[in-house]
Length: 172
Image 1: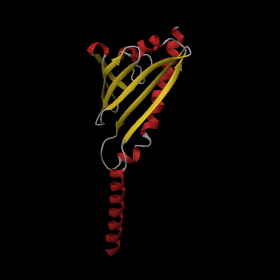
Image 2 (image 1 turned 60 degrees about the vertical axis):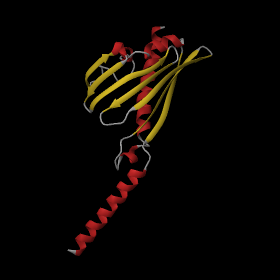
Image 3 (image 1 turned 90 degrees about the vertical axis):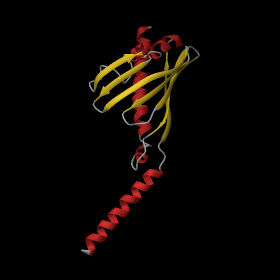
């Protein structure tokens, strides 16, 4: 009996240590990706300044078999969706015409993520930079995932920006 109590005590202490460390780990993230596109900046900006245009290049698309509901509101400045993991909403918070679009994203129980898409031009090429900042939810285990979350999101953003590049260059 003493053996089992000691074993249970050790397991309990181990779980408490793992959970305690998880609470102390940082949850914040700040990452960005970019893509150079061989078209004028205005052409690129027109594809990012309203959510219905995102349909053709972003990971949030009705063509995604995981998305069961997708709706636009506020003249294309808001997008609501439901997929097999939950509900999400994105809203355009601010636009600097021809330069930046700032987006607020809320998905399930996750805290808000703020993203900025910036369009700039240099030497005849247009660069689109997509930067996101936010934090993972509280709890003992999300801290362990914080180093991996930006990597997964970078991959999705990069894939979307490559689609945007192909779309813009194909249309010109």
